[in-house]
Figure (tube, rainbow, N blue to C red):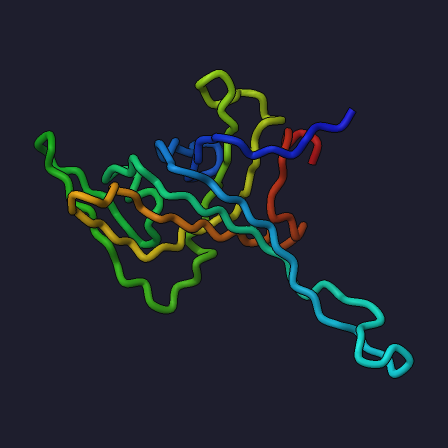
Length: 175
């Protein structure tokens, strides 16, 4: 029997494959898998396409992150480095202007773990996994009485260079 494709409430885990960290609470999560096509035209079909060819596929995950702390920020921001001092509480988050650097070079693994019974599911069949994902955002931290502190995160998924795999839902043992 086939299962319904549901995203539902979930946690975002991001980082080096096998050592991803929970990015904390979100307000919502949106997974978009998109396809680009080009029309194939023939004179016999006039102004309407005879067929279409796939010219690209991609995926993005959008989520307003509500719990991002300095440690997690160092994990997600491309080019960021967190330095801990010798004394407790001494930290510096260095953010580099990485002009000309490919996002793929900063890409990490992203897993969406569906929440079941108030906790992240340990059943890999409830997970969406995207092995090559880069954090893309225009970071804006605001303080005022009307604005909830969220960081609008966009994670862009890139295909594996060999297999063309973007991601998968379910257990990796079947790949």
